[in-house]
Image (tube, rainbow, N blue to C red; front, top):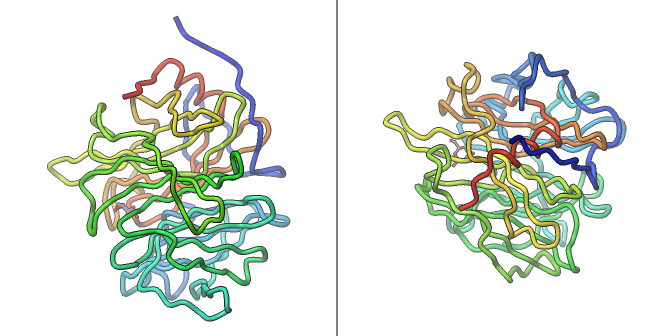
Length: 331
Ligand code: BMA
């Protein structure tokens, strides 16, 4: 028996036009025919743009991009777009300042997620503090980015903030890790009342079970609020004789306490298949860091391909929910 139930988006993050392409057939998820939307060497200083955060802003879209420079060191660059597909990316990195306005220099910065909470935009990314950990900064105008002073210990990656507080607390998914290319990793939830002090940690999801997500998992895009729970796209990693393979899965989390997983995809929903996913600086990587969703439930996911390109694919909240109802595996 095929289970179906209607699902409604409570808080779309995209109100106007959004990047969209009709499905070719009955697909659960389908790639944009014009991928990659950001290809190699987009500016003279940048070699590759991939895992990046995107949101609607003013009359178009704004993005905080992971940009690996020609010395291979990653940094974060701002970009703007009218349609969410064609991007103007700034040639110089974002300058983060402390609360006194003094620029903060960091060795590297990568995998940003961008979220709007009330009237403030937050960027959370992976950076250096005696090892890889999370950097956190806020902006209201995308000109001044004020960075908090080391709110997290090393080692931690894949930080994703929720788009609203619950019971007065900011919520964060993150993935405790190690100093290298971590061969393990589960998703945890943490809470904070001021963004500086984090606690009340809970385990959310463990790697394991299905082979595609057996080595490690990490939160991906900012969760989408629906009447059935928070819908999130995450990455799952398997280890092969040829190295790691990063695929995309989906999960649904309880509205009041997202540490509770209601549904989680048994199979991947997208895995490296096309050349811009299978060939590149790191082959076989699909890595989601952002998703746009409108009130009709249309979704556009932004994902890095092979640590080399930025791509988009599409689905709908209803399709993912129906899929999860029939293909879930919580362990
Ligand atoms: C992870 C992160 C991602 C990257 C992936 C594949 O550990 O570094 O930025 O896309 O590895 O190389």
